[in-house]
Length: 323
Image 1 (cartoon, rainbow, N blue to C red):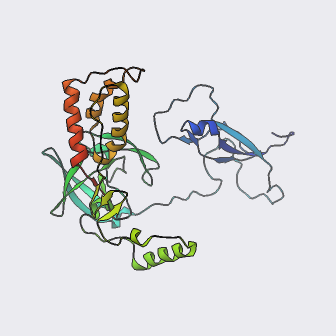
Image 2: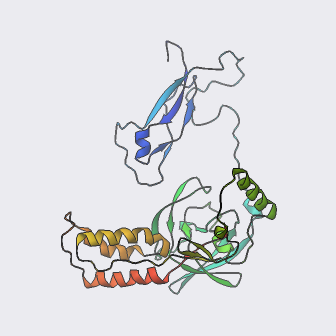
């Protein structure tokens, strides 16, 4: 109420909450709403703790710009919220016309067969957690997937061998909840390895070039690479693999500062070359303490973990798809 008159309001999040990773979905509160105001929030990095009494949203009163219009025959909102006063429209994709194939995935000699849905519109391939073997490892990531049951934080599989239509390839999968009728979604990272052509047509590529030409960017001719292997900042990118540039890791750990530098370097390499979490967990006890000059002792188990991590860095590859 403003000066005794009901007004609507705009529901917005607070910047302090956004800085903590909690995002409030904006909404409009109608003037005729009489129920308890509720909000919808999401965070890309769960779990997130919200303290009792913590301020995370705000209401901005809105003058009713339509009060002079003739009121329609729509019922008053009353206590109803989270919806439109009019009809409800849901946009869905018909999955029945998507091709399906059986795919066999293999990890350390263990195999599992799934029925997969082929989708050139998907950037990556996904397995529903209900069909992921319980004794196979998963790596937590900060990567989110969109377009499948909203925004979800994905887990990542280790490199797997996959066989589809008689072709055997290597790939990594995201493990995210899919709709109940879909066990596995095969995206471009696997379809590209199977020889499926780039989904962008010739006219689409011409449109992209024309749009870039309007902005008149300066592009070095040597940066234009039309065939693999593409080279960028020391990285070598082929049709199927991404090989990082040669890195040097300081593996001789003498002090806490040495351990901090090494674990920091390994953290960003982890998702690129697939360093298992259990190997990093073996090294985390080296980070105990606050004095960076403190001498640390590397156990034989940790030395073995360092050797295995070095193998991952020097031998493993990432897998990519055509953009």
